[in-house]
Image: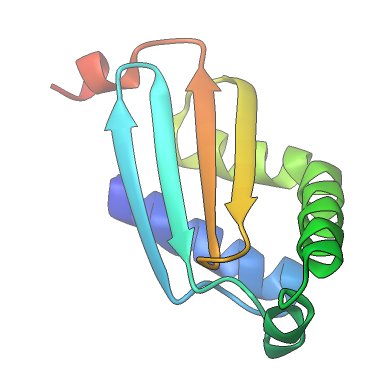
Length: 114
């Protein structure tokens, strides 16, 4: 299931952002799904990230974009897990080109899978 989530989110990124991450790792822990996406920045964003204002611009733009696509992301997780996503939290490290997403589920999925 973790692999399926990783593949689905990579595909969503490709369709939504026009580019997917280079590496994705998903872990299911209790009622959380933790996804780490690496290599997410475009070449233009890498150039922009060379100064502090560029870093802030990237973080703000990516946060806005992911917020606008949140219903799609929650739908992907629900479709794969059949669990309700109560909330999700995300942040990006522009310097490392990584994003972390934590999906908070209504139920303990890890317990159901064991």
